[in-house]
Length: 178
Image 1: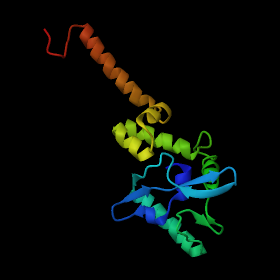
Image 2: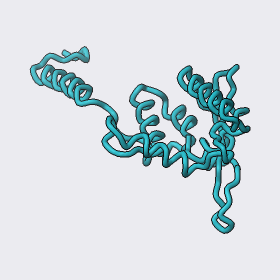
Image 3: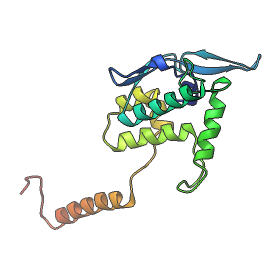
Image 4: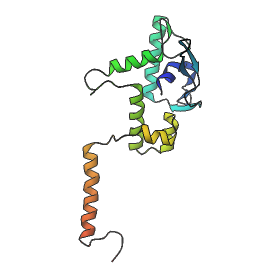
C-alpha cells in the first residue's frame, strides 16, 4: 500500500470474512491550506489486497493497543491526536529500518517495489501484481521491478544453459533432431 493509503485505511476496510483489505481511501495534503483530507487512492480506483494471517494478527495487535490507550478511531493507524498522518508513518518506517539487518533506511515505497519484485520472482502474473500494487503494467515494469534473485539462483540458471549449449555443440541435441 502507498503511505497515504495506510494513513487513510479504516477499520471497515478490513474484511475479515473474505480475508481481504479493501483499499479505497488515501490521505492527501492540500498544499494551499496545509490541511490533510481523505480521498480516493492515487489512480482513483478501489483495489483488493489479501488479508494474510500475519497481517490479520498485526491488525489485531494494533486494535488492542489503541483500545488499551483509548485512541481507537475509525482509522487503523491512530494515536492520542487522532489519525496518524502519512509523514509520521514514513518516518517510523525509516527509523525502524535504520538499524541492524538493513543496508540503509527503507521507505514504504521501497517496500512496495520489493513486494512487487518478489511476487514476480515467485511466478505471480504481472496483472495480479499490478492489481495488488495499484499500478499500470508500464509503470510497474519501469519503476517497480528489480532483480531479487540470489547469486545461487543465477548460478543454477547459467549452469543449466551452459550444459544445454555444450551438449548441443557436441552434437547431443535434445530437440528430437538427427
